[in-house]
Image 1 (cartoon, chains in turn red, green):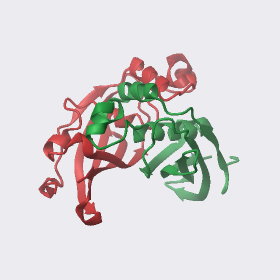
Image 2 (cartoon, rainbow over the protein chains, first blue to last red):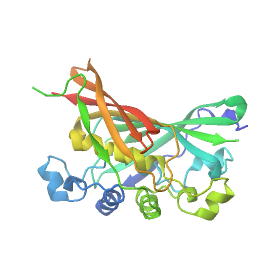
Image 3 (tube, each protein chain N blue to C red):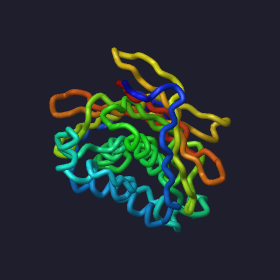
Length: 146
Length: 134
């Protein structure tokens, strides 16, 4: 069993500068051809400050923490046994290349199903801009195969 | 006046078969370096027959479908659960439709049910999106 005393644990926040090159690579990897996701001129023409991050990219901002998936170390989980159970995004403002975004993740819940065969860890992340405004919130569940 | 109403279908997006190259590129671009998606030796040790696709790759495809349909600035919420693992060579199709029109914070929102399915019809991702309509 994973140690549930960690419910409520807040991980160290980390800040990431959003880079145009990275967004171009992401667009290529997902087959996105709309030029606003790779070309700053097209993005500005469409009314964005610069290239906007696509809807699921905040997940990648969170992954940029100094330690990859710090929840694994905290809960002593084996990376080969985790699955992604669910993922929610809520958007308040756009995030664009050049922005510096700070992520703060917390363990919101832990529970099990199937008599403990599967354990769930619910993580919530708040993404704030340099003015301290929340721009995106996410919630995700990780499934642990025991 | 928007032409989005109850029952409006989101234009579907059919993807190329999932390849190892797709997964390698997505691992690098997304920052998800979990070896289970890119290293067959690791995947086998973990009890899987082979590497398999990142759930977030298919969610990115659903995102493409949504932003092909409406500008991203109208997207308020986007969520899904990952119902089944997507394997190599699976052909994923994303689709969705408006199932409810609602008012929130002075905005009209279209609640859309969205899904990613394999060619067999098996759902891999099931979720919903809230899109502002004006």
